[in-house]
Image (cartoon, rainbow, N blue to C red; front, side, top):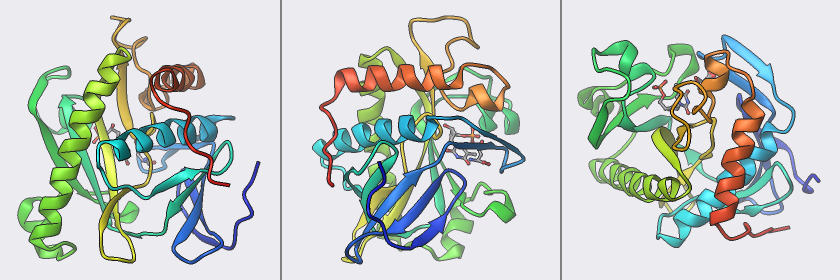
Length: 250
Ligand code: TMP
Ligand code: ASP
Protein backbone atom coordinates (compact mmCIF):
# COMPACT_ATOMS: atom_id res chain seq x y z
CA UNK A 1 0.00 0.00 0.00
CA UNK A 2 1.35 3.40 -1.03
CA UNK A 3 -0.02 6.67 0.36
CA UNK A 4 -1.12 9.38 -1.99
CA UNK A 5 2.13 11.31 -1.84
CA UNK A 6 3.44 14.41 -3.56
CA UNK A 7 6.85 14.98 -5.11
CA UNK A 8 10.13 13.46 -3.93
CA UNK A 9 11.90 15.81 -1.53
CA UNK A 10 14.97 13.75 -0.72
CA UNK A 11 16.38 10.30 -1.35
CA UNK A 12 18.92 8.76 1.01
CA UNK A 13 20.52 5.32 1.14
CA UNK A 14 17.69 3.69 3.08
CA UNK A 15 14.70 6.03 2.71
CA UNK A 16 12.84 8.33 0.36
CA UNK A 17 11.00 11.40 1.64
CA UNK A 18 7.95 12.72 -0.22
CA UNK A 19 5.75 15.75 0.28
CA UNK A 20 2.30 15.02 1.75
CA UNK A 21 -1.03 16.86 1.55
CA UNK A 22 0.14 19.82 3.57
CA UNK A 23 3.52 21.45 3.70
CA UNK A 24 4.52 20.54 7.26
CA UNK A 25 3.99 16.81 6.66
CA UNK A 26 5.95 14.21 4.71
CA UNK A 27 5.64 10.54 3.80
CA UNK A 28 8.77 8.47 4.32
CA UNK A 29 9.29 5.27 2.35
CA UNK A 30 11.63 2.73 3.94
CA UNK A 31 13.64 1.09 1.16
CA UNK A 32 14.81 -2.51 0.91
CA UNK A 33 18.39 -1.40 0.14
CA UNK A 34 21.11 -2.00 2.68
CA UNK A 35 24.45 -0.22 2.57
CA UNK A 36 27.51 -0.39 4.78
CA UNK A 37 30.91 1.26 5.00
CA UNK A 38 29.62 4.46 3.40
CA UNK A 39 27.81 2.57 0.64
CA UNK A 40 30.90 0.63 -0.48
CA UNK A 41 28.83 -2.49 0.23
CA UNK A 42 25.26 -2.62 -1.09
CA UNK A 43 22.47 -5.18 -1.35
CA UNK A 44 18.70 -5.46 -1.54
CA UNK A 45 16.67 -7.36 1.04
CA UNK A 46 13.04 -7.90 0.06
CA UNK A 47 10.84 -6.84 3.03
CA UNK A 48 13.57 -4.99 4.99
CA UNK A 49 11.75 -1.69 4.42
CA UNK A 50 8.57 -2.98 6.03
CA UNK A 51 10.41 -4.50 8.99
CA UNK A 52 12.35 -1.28 9.72
CA UNK A 53 9.29 0.91 9.24
CA UNK A 54 7.14 -1.12 11.62
CA UNK A 55 9.90 -1.44 14.24
CA UNK A 56 10.58 2.31 14.07
CA UNK A 57 6.88 3.14 14.37
CA UNK A 58 6.53 1.07 17.56
CA UNK A 59 9.66 2.61 19.07
CA UNK A 60 8.69 6.20 18.21
CA UNK A 61 5.27 5.65 19.80
CA UNK A 62 6.88 4.21 22.89
CA UNK A 63 9.21 7.22 23.14
CA UNK A 64 6.28 9.58 22.60
CA UNK A 65 4.60 8.10 25.69
CA UNK A 66 7.77 8.97 27.63
CA UNK A 67 7.56 12.61 26.53
CA UNK A 68 10.28 12.48 23.86
CA UNK A 69 9.45 14.84 20.97
CA UNK A 70 9.67 13.01 17.61
CA UNK A 71 8.82 13.63 13.95
CA UNK A 72 6.58 10.56 13.87
CA UNK A 73 2.88 10.96 13.03
CA UNK A 74 1.81 7.39 12.23
CA UNK A 75 2.21 4.51 9.79
CA UNK A 76 0.92 5.09 6.27
CA UNK A 77 1.39 1.66 4.69
CA UNK A 78 3.59 -1.39 5.30
CA UNK A 79 6.82 0.44 4.57
CA UNK A 80 5.55 4.02 4.82
CA UNK A 81 5.54 6.42 7.74
CA UNK A 82 3.92 9.83 8.00
CA UNK A 83 6.10 12.38 9.77
CA UNK A 84 6.43 16.04 10.48
CA UNK A 85 8.64 17.82 7.99
CA UNK A 86 11.95 18.74 9.58
CA UNK A 87 15.10 20.53 8.66
CA UNK A 88 17.59 17.75 9.35
CA UNK A 89 20.54 18.69 11.57
CA UNK A 90 23.53 17.08 9.80
CA UNK A 91 24.77 15.20 12.85
CA UNK A 92 24.70 11.53 13.84
CA UNK A 93 24.43 11.13 17.59
CA UNK A 94 25.67 7.70 18.67
CA UNK A 95 25.07 6.26 22.15
CA UNK A 96 27.21 3.31 23.17
CA UNK A 97 26.37 1.02 26.10
CA UNK A 98 28.79 -1.74 25.14
CA UNK A 99 31.98 -1.30 23.12
CA UNK A 100 31.65 -2.53 19.53
CA UNK A 101 32.10 -1.36 15.94
CA UNK A 102 34.16 1.74 15.19
CA UNK A 103 34.94 2.35 18.86
CA UNK A 104 36.95 -0.88 18.94
CA UNK A 105 38.61 -0.18 15.59
CA UNK A 106 39.70 3.31 16.62
CA UNK A 107 40.66 2.79 20.29
CA UNK A 108 42.14 -0.05 22.36
CA UNK A 109 38.80 -0.57 24.14
CA UNK A 110 37.96 -4.27 23.90
CA UNK A 111 34.71 -5.38 22.21
CA UNK A 112 32.09 -6.20 24.83
CA UNK A 113 33.39 -3.74 27.47
CA UNK A 114 30.46 -2.18 29.36
CA UNK A 115 30.37 1.58 29.06
CA UNK A 116 28.66 3.15 32.02
CA UNK A 117 27.63 5.91 31.76
CA UNK A 118 26.97 5.41 28.05
CA UNK A 119 29.43 7.04 25.68
CA UNK A 120 27.95 9.74 23.46
CA UNK A 121 29.77 10.33 20.15
CA UNK A 122 28.74 12.99 17.65
CA UNK A 123 29.58 12.58 13.95
CA UNK A 124 29.22 15.07 11.12
CA UNK A 125 26.71 13.62 8.64
CA UNK A 126 28.41 13.94 5.27
CA UNK A 127 28.97 10.94 3.02
CA UNK A 128 31.69 12.68 1.00
CA UNK A 129 33.67 13.32 4.19
CA UNK A 130 32.90 9.79 5.48
CA UNK A 131 30.84 10.99 8.49
CA UNK A 132 33.81 12.10 10.65
CA UNK A 133 33.76 11.94 14.45
CA UNK A 134 33.66 15.51 15.83
CA UNK A 135 35.48 16.94 18.80
CA UNK A 136 33.66 19.35 21.13
CA UNK A 137 35.56 22.25 19.62
CA UNK A 138 34.95 21.22 16.02
CA UNK A 139 31.24 20.89 16.74
CA UNK A 140 31.25 24.35 18.27
CA UNK A 141 33.23 25.72 15.32
CA UNK A 142 30.75 24.27 12.80
CA UNK A 143 28.09 26.50 14.37
CA UNK A 144 25.24 24.10 13.63
CA UNK A 145 23.74 24.34 17.12
CA UNK A 146 23.43 26.85 19.91
CA UNK A 147 24.76 25.71 23.29
CA UNK A 148 21.17 25.23 24.42
CA UNK A 149 20.23 23.13 21.39
CA UNK A 150 23.30 21.00 21.92
CA UNK A 151 22.43 20.36 25.52
CA UNK A 152 18.81 19.60 24.54
CA UNK A 153 19.96 17.03 21.98
CA UNK A 154 22.29 15.36 24.45
CA UNK A 155 19.56 15.21 27.09
CA UNK A 156 17.05 13.71 24.64
CA UNK A 157 19.64 11.19 23.41
CA UNK A 158 20.46 10.05 26.96
CA UNK A 159 16.78 9.76 27.87
CA UNK A 160 16.11 7.75 24.69
CA UNK A 161 18.98 5.46 25.66
CA UNK A 162 17.61 4.92 29.15
CA UNK A 163 14.10 4.11 27.88
CA UNK A 164 15.21 1.91 25.00
CA UNK A 165 17.84 0.02 26.99
CA UNK A 166 15.27 -1.00 29.55
CA UNK A 167 12.56 -1.69 26.93
CA UNK A 168 14.85 -3.95 24.89
CA UNK A 169 16.07 -5.66 28.04
CA UNK A 170 12.46 -6.63 28.85
CA UNK A 171 12.23 -8.41 25.48
CA UNK A 172 15.60 -10.12 25.95
CA UNK A 173 17.55 -7.85 23.62
CA UNK A 174 20.75 -6.03 24.56
CA UNK A 175 20.96 -2.51 23.16
CA UNK A 176 24.69 -2.35 22.41
CA UNK A 177 24.69 1.00 20.63
CA UNK A 178 22.56 3.08 18.26
CA UNK A 179 22.48 6.22 16.16
CA UNK A 180 19.97 9.06 16.36
CA UNK A 181 19.30 12.00 14.07
CA UNK A 182 17.50 15.18 14.98
CA UNK A 183 15.57 17.79 13.03
CA UNK A 184 13.98 21.18 13.60
CA UNK A 185 10.27 21.63 12.89
CA UNK A 186 8.50 24.78 11.75
CA UNK A 187 8.04 26.09 15.30
CA UNK A 188 11.80 25.85 15.96
CA UNK A 189 11.42 22.83 18.26
CA UNK A 190 14.06 20.09 18.06
CA UNK A 191 12.60 16.62 17.50
CA UNK A 192 13.99 13.13 17.12
CA UNK A 193 13.87 12.24 13.40
CA UNK A 194 15.01 9.51 10.98
CA UNK A 195 14.44 5.92 12.19
CA UNK A 196 15.26 3.58 15.06
CA UNK A 197 15.65 0.10 13.63
CA UNK A 198 18.13 -2.78 13.32
CA UNK A 199 19.76 -0.70 10.55
CA UNK A 200 20.67 1.97 13.11
CA UNK A 201 21.07 -0.04 16.34
CA UNK A 202 23.24 -2.94 17.44
CA UNK A 203 21.00 -5.50 19.14
CA UNK A 204 22.18 -8.77 20.66
CA UNK A 205 19.85 -11.62 21.60
CA UNK A 206 20.13 -12.26 25.35
CA UNK A 207 18.88 -15.82 24.80
CA UNK A 208 21.94 -16.73 22.67
CA UNK A 209 25.57 -16.66 23.80
CA UNK A 210 27.33 -17.34 20.50
CA UNK A 211 28.80 -13.95 19.49
CA UNK A 212 27.75 -14.24 15.84
CA UNK A 213 24.43 -16.02 16.25
CA UNK A 214 23.20 -13.41 18.76
CA UNK A 215 23.53 -10.49 16.30
CA UNK A 216 20.07 -9.24 15.24
CA UNK A 217 21.04 -6.06 13.36
CA UNK A 218 22.85 -4.71 10.29
CA UNK A 219 26.13 -6.18 11.53
CA UNK A 220 24.83 -9.41 9.92
CA UNK A 221 25.23 -7.64 6.58
CA UNK A 222 28.43 -5.77 7.52
CA UNK A 223 30.06 -9.04 8.63
CA UNK A 224 28.69 -11.19 5.76
CA UNK A 225 26.51 -13.27 8.07
CA UNK A 226 23.29 -14.74 6.63
CA UNK A 227 19.65 -14.54 7.80
CA UNK A 228 19.40 -10.75 8.04
CA UNK A 229 15.65 -10.76 7.42
CA UNK A 230 15.06 -13.49 9.99
CA UNK A 231 16.99 -11.39 12.53
CA UNK A 232 15.01 -8.21 11.78
CA UNK A 233 11.80 -10.27 11.84
CA UNK A 234 12.67 -11.58 15.30
CA UNK A 235 13.23 -8.00 16.52
CA UNK A 236 9.85 -6.92 15.08
CA UNK A 237 8.09 -9.91 16.66
CA UNK A 238 9.47 -9.13 20.12
CA UNK A 239 8.88 -5.36 19.80
CA UNK A 240 5.29 -5.87 18.63
CA UNK A 241 4.70 -8.31 21.49
CA UNK A 242 5.52 -5.53 23.95
CA UNK A 243 3.93 -2.47 22.27
CA UNK A 244 0.52 -1.29 21.19
CA UNK A 245 -0.23 -1.58 17.44
CA UNK A 246 1.12 1.61 15.84
CA UNK A 247 -1.57 4.08 14.76
CA UNK A 248 -2.43 4.24 11.08
CA UNK A 249 -2.72 7.81 9.95
CA UNK A 250 -4.14 7.35 6.48
P1 TMP B 1 29.81 2.49 14.59
O1 TMP B 1 30.28 1.51 15.61
O2 TMP B 1 30.08 2.05 13.17
O3 TMP B 1 30.31 3.88 14.86
O4 TMP B 1 28.20 2.55 14.72
C1 TMP B 1 27.60 2.90 15.93
C2 TMP B 1 26.08 2.72 15.80
O5 TMP B 1 25.56 3.63 14.86
C3 TMP B 1 25.66 1.34 15.32
O6 TMP B 1 24.51 0.96 16.06
C4 TMP B 1 25.31 1.51 13.89
C5 TMP B 1 24.88 2.95 13.81
N1 TMP B 1 25.27 3.59 12.56
C6 TMP B 1 24.30 4.09 11.72
O7 TMP B 1 23.11 4.00 12.00
N2 TMP B 1 24.68 4.69 10.57
C7 TMP B 1 25.97 4.84 10.21
O8 TMP B 1 26.26 5.41 9.15
C8 TMP B 1 26.98 4.32 11.09
C9 TMP B 1 28.43 4.44 10.75
C10 TMP B 1 26.57 3.71 12.26
N1 ASP C 1 24.80 3.55 6.84
C1 ASP C 1 26.18 3.66 6.47
C2 ASP C 1 26.38 3.38 5.01
O1 ASP C 1 25.94 3.02 4.22
C3 ASP C 1 27.15 2.88 7.27
C4 ASP C 1 26.74 1.74 8.13
O2 ASP C 1 25.63 1.67 8.62
O3 ASP C 1 27.60 0.87 8.36
O4 ASP C 1 27.11 3.44 4.33
